[in-house]
Structures are given as structure tokens and as C-alpha cells.
Length: 69
View (tube, rainbow, N blue to C red):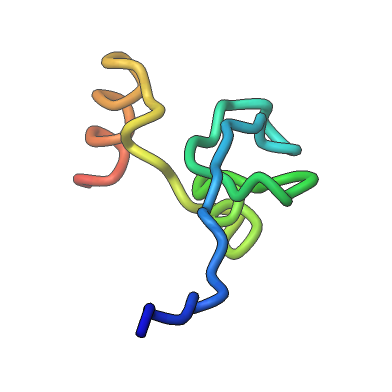
């Protein structure tokens, strides 16, 4: 007896640009038409959030000075 197929197709992925900020989002399903990156999702949930990774060294220093008072 041979094994039956599970019916699962091979998953194919691609890279798409975020529809808000245009940054590249990797490993998006090949059936997707558009995508939001994690930064844009975070900003939409909390507009006052600060993503430290996106700050320049000067902006980060200013952020620390302003928030350590």
C-alpha cells in the first residue's frame, strides 16, 4: 500500500513592500496581495510608540535625555 497524500501543497513565499512605509517584508505567502510590516502595525495600534531600532544615534540620545528626567 502506498501512502495517501495529505493534500497539502508546497508553501511558496515572496518578498513584498509594506503598503504603508514601503519597506521590504520577507516570507510573505505567495497568494498575498499586500502586507503591513510589524512597524506599521505597532504604529497603528499605538501612534505614540517609539521604535528604538529606527532612531539615529542622535535621536536615540535625545530620546534618552528627554525620558530620563
